[in-house]
Length: 195
Length: 195
Image (tube, rainbow over all chains, first blue to last red):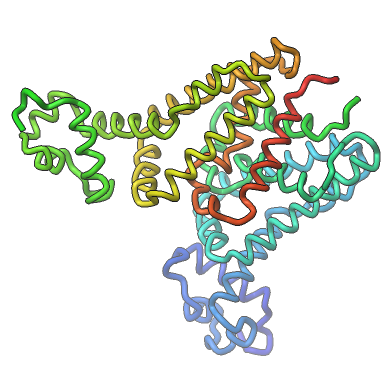
């Protein structure tokens, strides 16, 4: 591959393959360059440091994992149903990633943990979507909350067992669906405006 | 020390010291016996296997960590206040253990993770206490829940960020108290009977 055709996307795809093959502890920028048949200088022209490359590939993976969630948050169904759909979709996406390709999931869990900035940005995006749903509920009169952003973060924290990768080993347990339903119902009830 | 005076409690105390000194990966029953000046056979008379000894010391540590919680659960203040007190005491106890002696906390986190039976028993005890509080709330008319035991488990799951050791690194964050308050209020609101 000539340096002229080397795109950031091609580098990220190759980086994911290298991470899969060597694991997050051993994968290097030189391995990525070798996989692409380019010099490591060509890779550094797109990503100035190894950390920047790892953050970019992690961000890309997180975006891929959570595609579709923003659309649910922006929907126009009643907020309680929309919140349930959003939490269900988040759990389903995480669980699919964890169970379909456990090695890659573990690799990305390490990468996510390496970079506080990437986590903060990611949680920030999800919290914004939750805030949008809760603010919509307040506007339509189904939810009550003094501060939608605070309530959003509480919902995110309260449902951590169903999206935080540290719990991935529990996501194939037989009672996990029932546990999810119970927590989901509890937090939605907690947001409901008094009738 | 002669074998005659060797109590289970002395073995457990010595095991904790050995775990602290060598770490959970390296500590052996022989180390425990040496620390006590007895043969490893004397230790095995009290605990038939290394796993049994580790489970017993873990159980003892968990009980010590959570002393006082059962009394709160059995109290007679209104259930919403009692639930808040209980969750606050649980978080405070866990946080104190994690921050005061991080090495021992990490050691016990490894041990707890080693034995599914010990975790299940421990979570079972805490869930029983939560069930008692929630059932009390239903009886006095402050809480509504179809199945107190299911609601109890949902409350336990929803507050995991404030008691599960995997989150210990976050317990000294400046915003952790506010996050705890927000989740606590959300779950208590979620249990409230319609007014």
